[in-house]
Length: 88
Image 1 (tube, one colour):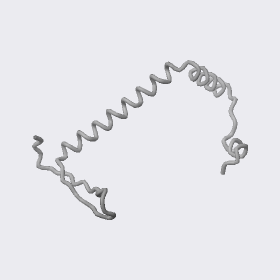
Image 2 (cartoon, helix red, strand yellow; image 1 turned 180 degrees about the vertical axis):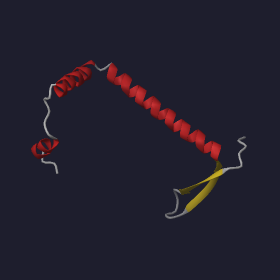
Image 3 (tube, rainbow, N blue to C red; image 1 turned 90 degrees about the vertical axis):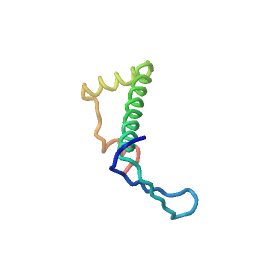
Image 4 (cartoon, rainbow, N blue to C red; image 1 turned 135 degrees about the horizontal axis):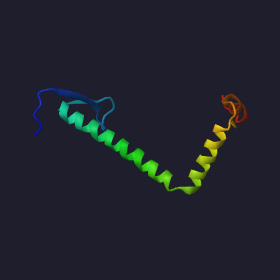
């Protein structure tokens, strides 16, 4: 059991009943664990995405070509692209 006198109050809406709210008080340490878990999940997601990109040869070729073109100055102003595609 977590022993911490500091508490954090979380307010949430119950699934049943519109507008019904409920509060629960949890130890700050438990909230910190939740935040750490979220950060770890973000790190995993980023690493997994990098891995998937690294094994996708066609995508890597396109990315490298785009980078070469960018470095060579073969770019277009964003305003021009917006007009071309009818964006505001």
